[in-house]
Structures are given as structure tokens and as C-alpha cells.
Length: 243
Image 1 (cartoon, rainbow, N blue to C red):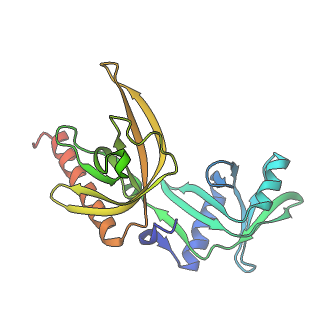
Image 2 (cartoon, helix red, strand yellow):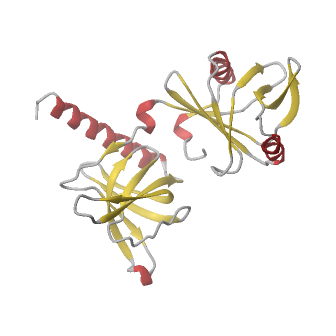
Image 3 (spheres, rainbow, N blue to C red):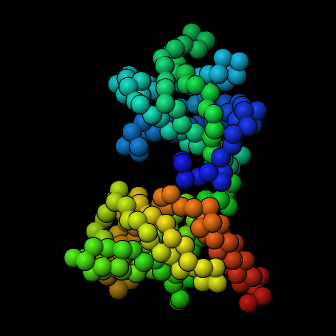
């Protein structure tokens, strides 16, 4: 979440309104207990602004509840009116709400609010693909370029045709360079978050790796946003029959 500084909400009044709205609409919330390896679905029962507390529903799994209480950090993800909301907590306590078991966490000092455009993924050109250069060790061939499959303000998907990287989930690559046509070069670290093997029509296998931007600067993120806007404008023009 520290990489989403451009979308951070710090206004206490706005955070309260968002959390209250999530609770009133009974929006389900994904509670990530240990990264993405342990997930609990919860909801906001109430927000006590005066006491700086947010009350959450418990899991029906008592063992999972114990893991939640033992966790040092919890991440939460939900949506409100098609807007993605993320926040975190470093403390959680067992309590009750209206006579039923519940959790409570401190009122978050900040949260992340992402409009659809801000995390929407758009496919990159196939005929003249955008490429990223990853500085691999010498034994893997040194700096190597890979074509992109899509791009968003959160990361990219690359095509590893020769399976050079393996599945590589969780591995980080510093100082990766992405050349965005008519926009410029973006430099950022990438972390591989997911891997998918695709079988093509010619029976060849291609690997698609979803990569997250890590520590991307505001300037580089702005360049990515400009490029996404450019791709959307070109796509809309094609749909309208103007190009």
C-alpha cells in the first residue's frame, strides 16, 4: 500500500464517511491475514468515531479467528460504489457487538481509494509490443527484454516466451526499464505476483507473469497514467471508426 501514495486519503472526515458507507451497504471485505495466504471475509459492523474504533465481524472458523488475533498486521480490501478501498491495521482485539463476538481495530489514519481508471488494466499493442528490460544475472543471459501483455497503474503483465524467469512468484527485480511509446522510459522495481501458462493455437506454451510496481516514483507513475490514457483514446477512436 505504500506504493499508492497518490491515492492516499488522510482526511479523517472522509475516511469516516467511506467506512460508514461500506458498513451501511454491507459490503464484504477481504481481510488478508498473512499476505494473500490466509484470507477472511468480513464486514464493518459499526464505526465508533468518538472512540477511534472500527468493529468487524468475526470468522466462523475459530482457528482462523485465533490467527487473526495473533497477526501483527492485517490488510483490508473492498469496494464502495465501484471504487476500490484498501486500508490496514497493526492491532486487532476480540470484543462483542450487540451481544455477538466481534473484532475491533483502531480507526485507520489513512486509506487508499482507487477509482476504476487508476487500477484498470489495458492491453498493450500486439503488432509493435511495449517492452520491459529486466537486469537478469549473467548466468540467465544478463539484461533481457520481454514484451508486455497489459499495463495498469499498479503493474504490468509480461510474456516470458522462452520461460527464462521460471514461475518466479514473489521474486523482485530492481531497476527495470519500460519503454512507453511517445511517453518515455519508466524505471521501477517489479515483483512477480502471479504466473499463468497459456497454450497457444500452435500448441506452444507461453507464460504470462503479473508484476507489481514496487517503489515507483510519482513521475514514473504519472508517465504510466499518461500512456494508459493514450491507449484508451486510441482504442475509443478505433471503436468509433475514426482511425
